[in-house]
Amino acid sequence: MKHLVLVFSFLVVGCTSLNNAGESSQNAEIYVGIKNGNLIYQGKITEASNNAIFSLLNDAELKPSRLVITSNGGEIGAGMDLGRWVKDNKLDVEVNGVCASSCANYVFPAAHTKYLRKDSVLVWHGSAWQSDWDVEEEFVDMFNTHITLMRKQETKFYSDIGIDKSSYHLWSDQI
Picture 1 (cartoon, rainbow, N blue to C red):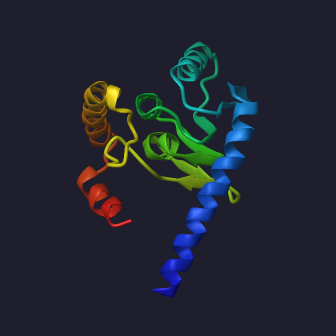
Picture 2 (spheres, rainbow, N blue to C red; picture 1 turned 60 degrees about the vertical axis):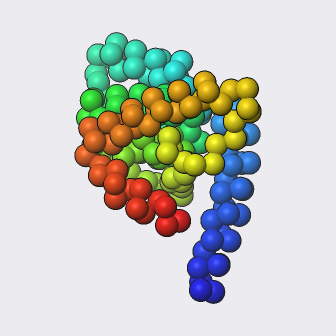
């Protein structure tokens, strides 16, 4: 039990530090491009950044096979779109720094081959199925409609990339 408390404390402090450090560095440097033969995705996962990276691969004469990513995540739908694109293009994913939230939930598991650098951090949390959403009362109906759609898309996404979501729920509910 003593070790469990120690591990939990480390995770809470680590995630808090990671979030604060990652936000400032990611907000200062958002980049999507091709460097050294790799696709680079740095910063929040957004529809705009996704469209840019999709176009880069589409227009490239020599098609990169690896996506190097640093991201604290982003909107659930944008994360699944990027993950689906990674899967469809059979891309390898290399984490350079932080891959958290939508990055870890959707992009990393969709990769053909996954690479974690020795100083990288992979942080799974949340998903369309998390139960602790903080939604203002006036937006509850709109949110419920949106999250129901995201949950259906997430279930299909995990099925499409070969992840048994029922096992994931059993595991995540015990954390």
